[in-house]
Image (tube, rainbow, N blue to C red):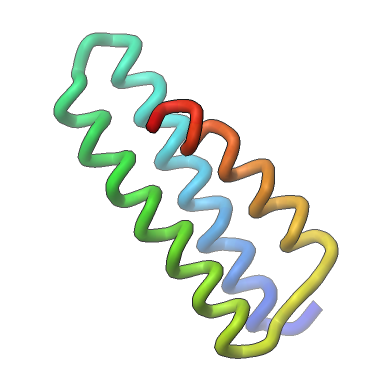
Length: 77
């Protein structure tokens, strides 16, 4: 794997962590903080897709990771 793909996968994983943290805070009643985390997770979701297209970096792992990261994000939205 080259560095570009690893960087894009890190963006995807960070977005997934943000959306899972938002889910946790939403369940704790911190709705405004959870909403802010969701907005950042959307930014990272857009950013990893943009970087993958810009650098023409596609991998099977990236497609699977992006799909898995999108599940909690879109469940909260």
